[in-house]
Structures are given as structure tokens and as C-alpha cells.
Length: 309
Image (cartoon, rainbow, N blue to C red; front, side, top):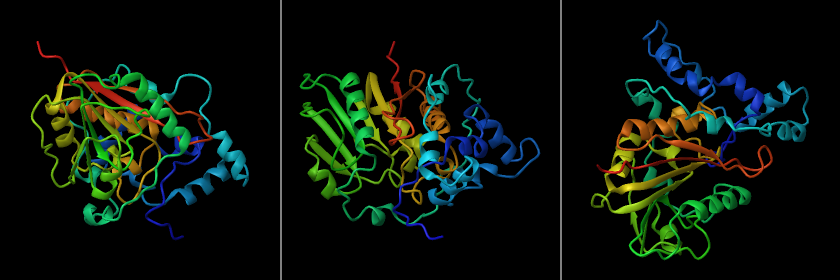
């Protein structure tokens, strides 16, 4: 089965996901076992890396009891009640040490990102309902438009930032990989082309920004701890960092620990980045998925920089 590297990866049916992936609370124990700390070197969470969504979804249909993909798709809707994604960062007992290793940030395609992103892609990577949900969320949490002195940084930006229509501030900086895309983004007052996987150092003075946003790109960071420490450095005290993500990605460029885990795991992983970077209040997760099981899901993990004493 040939799968294009440009296809976005969607996770399988929820029932299959529960069978394949352990709960987020078990992530660290799995990693411990995998690395031989409790007698095993196997890597069960790597088993399905690179298989692609078509094969997994076909298997999901079998588990659902038939080959009707439409019924299988509908059945993947989140049950009524609280989202597991929103629960995963509540009352977390974090491991003493950062639980991930270098191999967790490897990728199927380790070629230069600058080549991969050299051609502009004037497309959106999540569907319209997910975009609308994110824009609505931003309208509630971002500083009001045209607030004096407010500065925003949109990391891993492109031709659109999904901010509310007409949103403006004195300074909105975009950082991305393709200059043509950044030039097209109407919300930006300035932009910087930089590959954070090569140089995670943010070219800004400390305490420069009130808000940092990152849309469906945290899964591509191969040096997330360096990036999150830099985010903490350039945020003003009390500043807000918002990492939003779906289940869509260029799977060949997403990090291994991301492509081999599920949605709730992803929230735990991003929460871990905030926690171990230091200097942030406890991270929180929000499920803003507009139509669970019918359109792209949308999740947010956010944290504020601690206020200085």
C-alpha cells in the first residue's frame, strides 16, 4: 500500500485507538519498560508508526463489526461527557525526570525541513469547523484587538493565523518556514523565516510577548524543550502560550512519539513540555472539537508564564 507523505494522518476509530494505545497515565511506565529500566526493551508504542491512516481505518472497520466506513466514522464520536483530553492534565504526578529520549523525536523523514517547506502551501491543514472553533477560542482568550502595548508571536506560522477577523495589535510577529506564505498573512506586522529544528533560539529579547500561539505544528518540533524554554524566556510575566493541535499532520515529518500515540497522549506530551521547561504555571488542556467524530477534532494545551515575585 502506497501512502503519499503529504497525506494528513487521522487516527483510527476510537475503539481501535483504545486497543492500540495505552492511557496517558501509563505513558511513563511504557517508556520505562521500553528502555529496560524494569526489564524490557520492547517498544509497543512504535508498532504502528508509518502504517498510515488507510490501513488503520480499515482495521477499525473490522473491529466495529462491518465494512461500512460511514457507520464506523460516526461511531468514533466522543461520548457525551467530559473529554479525556481535558482530564489528562488534571492532578498530574509528573515523573521526576523528563520522560522522553532522543529517539522519541526522530521522524520517518529526516531530510532537511527547509526543502520540505520550500514550496508554499496556500491551504489549511484542518477543516473549516475546526478552524472556526479555534478562531472562536482565540476570540475569548486573546487580548482585545488594538490593546496598546500588546505583542503576539505566532510560531510556525504561515499565510493564515486563524485569529479573529480584523484582529490587530501593535506587534504580531510570525515565525515560519516559507517566506511566501508569511508575506501573505494579513495579521502579521513582521515575520522571520527560521527553522526551529535547526535553531530553536528565538531572536527576541526576554519578556517581549504577551501571547505565543502555535497552530497544528507542535508535533513537528524535534527540540521541544529548547523551544519551550525559549518561549518562557520571551514571554512577559503572566504571558500566555497556546499550543493547538488536531489529529492531522504530515506524518513523515511529525515526531515519532506523536505518530505512535493518541489524542489524550498528545495533550500529556505537550503538557510535559511546559512542565519540564520550567517557569510556567501548571498546563491545562481544552477540547474545542466542534463536531466530535464528524469533523476534525481540535485541542488546546496552554500555560501561563509564572509571575515574578
